[in-house]
Image (tube, rainbow, N blue to C red; front, side, top):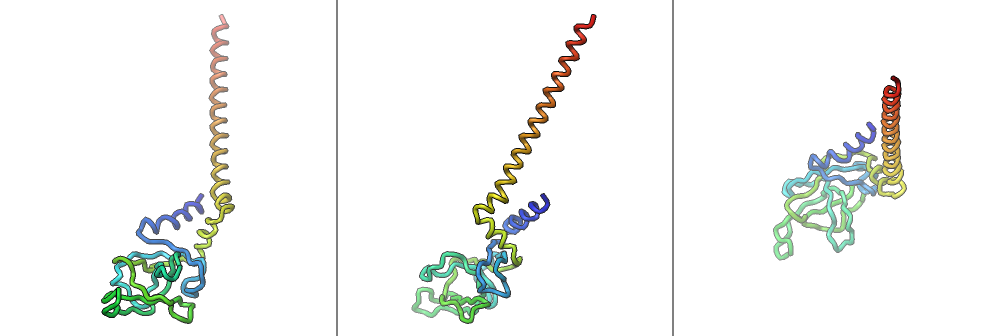
Length: 180
C-alpha cells in the first residue's frame, strides 16, 4: 500500500504542481538524461529560453516526427527579413550524445515552452512497462479482482454473522415464551 501511494505521488504530484512529464526513450541525451528517465518540464515564456537549456518540443512537421523530443538548445538566432518568421527567434537543438545539431530550424509555437526543470533516472521504465497490456493486467487487474473478492467475502461473512445472531435471538425469545 505504501509503495502504491509513493508511486501515485511520483506520478500525480508533479502534474498538480504545474509540471509536464515525459519519459526519455532514446539515448540522444545521455549521459545527462539516461534512457528511462522521467523529465519534468516547467512551462516558461519563450523569451526566457537560453542556449544550454533543455526543452521538450515536437519538431517541425516536415521532419515526420510526431513524438516530443527533449534536446538542448544549441543556438538561438533572429530570422532574417524576407523569411516567413522575420524577426522571430529561431532555435537550433542538439542531443548531448549526438555529434551534430538537429537538422531543423524552428520557431517555437506560442508564447510558452516546456523547459526541463528536474529528472528522475530510470523511473520512466515503470511508465513504459505500464503501456504493455499484460503488465497493466498484472499491476491493475489482479489487485482489483483481489480487492473485489475480499470485499464480497467480508460482506458475506458479516451478513452471515448477522443472520446467525438474529436466529439465536429468535431462538432465545421462542424458548422464553414456551417456559411457563
